[in-house]
Image (cartoon, rainbow, N blue to C red; front, side, top):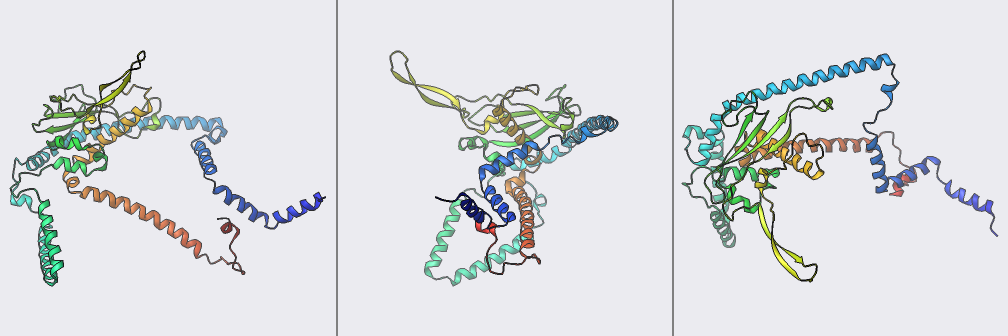
Length: 412
């Protein structure tokens, strides 16, 4: 019969073979490798963020009284900040009129209505590009002359394939598909554009931003009283899909703090949006599709197929946003998500796409955005590398004499 004391002693020897500190490290390492446990810990910490620590409540009443006075001052600052943004909007309305002639020139050139002069087409890098092109041609000519029969034939085939891809003739007017190309170069917008949208968007020849509000000068088209906001206008040439020449998307903005939560104010925010009715020609409404649905008769058990019209994915659903107002408090999660995406798109078109359309057409604006992201990522990598280097190059670190690994490493 075994001796309990001997067994306990034996177990104790096994557990005690590692110092208490190492045993704790082993236990911690094992726990940290449990993803479910980590998620639970992170969730618990997330719930603690923003929770009152009790420090303010522990202060003397006289100090708490002064803090309330500072909060009231902060509310007044928020209100003043709202006035500041109202004046910024008024300034936008003023400069929108100054930008208008430049945007009209852009539209006329892109649509082929006006041919720019040689002086207007002069670009600083043209001379450099010509020199580089000449050097490249000379280099290519030298390389081709050195190639043997099979390689020369391959180069010839490649050249023929390149020629086949050049579909636009030299006398092409304007810049074909200017806005469609610019929009497809933006990930946010390209995700909305379906294949069946493209034939219509090829007729899009201008996108404009019309600022609305007390300081707006566009009172004839969008009469007062008009709330602070903006209207996106999509202008189309005559096409076989709908009779509208302009499709509009209006955004209403709020520029004052919420009375119930004034400290959440961070500047103007979109509070509601409205689209327009698209007058589709017969059989051309691409925002709808007909599907066959199977129905079963309850009494007879017979089945039949019926045609049902359902919503179809399309860029033109952008002009039919969810019908909600700023007072809708019981908005479901799906509607909130749709509106958040809609507001993001509206802001992007207003602040980025319209002002820099040619740079999105060429892709230069996209490259600039990627460059900024790459710089941020490189900075993070450098920080991680520095941390690793500090650990590896620790002058106080002494490896074990027997060459064994620490207990934490053995557990991995």
